[in-house]
Image 1 (cartoon, rainbow, N blue to C red):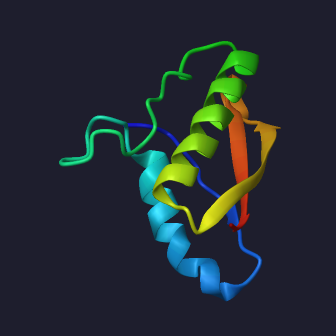
Image 2 (cartoon, one colour):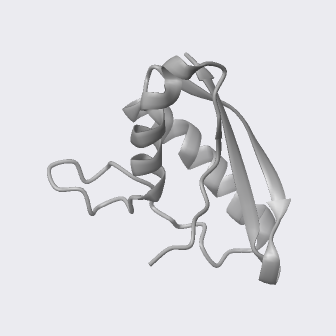
Image 3 (cartoon, rainbow, N blue to C red):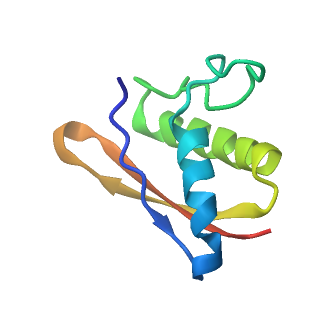
Length: 96
């Protein structure tokens, strides 16, 4: 349904288990997870101008990772221009 390409940079192998959890968080639409309707991203940034979409995505990403994955923190989000005018985000994480 959504065309996301998730890439992660890990500082060591002990964070590999976080990959599954982070992938689930970032690809789940908020409101669709039974028993926890706040889990996931609202995806309000879709179809917005690039600058607005980037800002909304990073703000929600940092908030949700802090809430649902307190063992890690978002260090930075790197942006790349993709095909067909798409904007690709590379999320770099660290231990909290």
